[in-house]
Image (cartoon, rainbow, N blue to C red; front, side, top):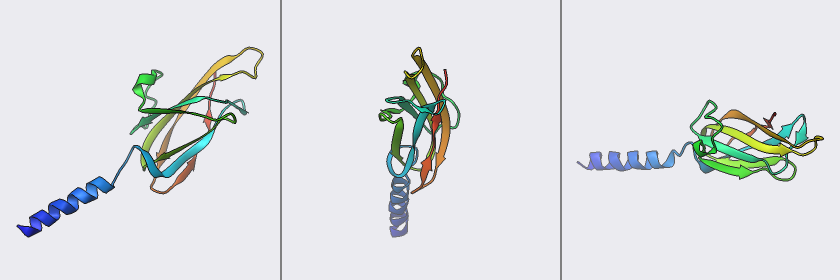
Length: 122
């Protein structure tokens, strides 16, 4: 009986310590949002957890969002897993302002830093 109880608690601890596909971990996805090599300031980056393919344009499909800084740079602390990043922004350096967007799948392991630049297009 004691073995079953110890096994149960060991399993519970193991499952609770294996976080995956969520924010706040010791891994980092960072990069820059750019259009034709020009930084896209204040772009919105949408994050879909546990995704390897483009989930779609509707922002309601995504689990979290954040903004790039004035240099187009972003950083996301997360746990290991699969994520899809989708960025939307405005390229105001053209003669006419253009809405730009684009995305990329990311797989990250524990304690890893992945640099993933997001190229956006019209």
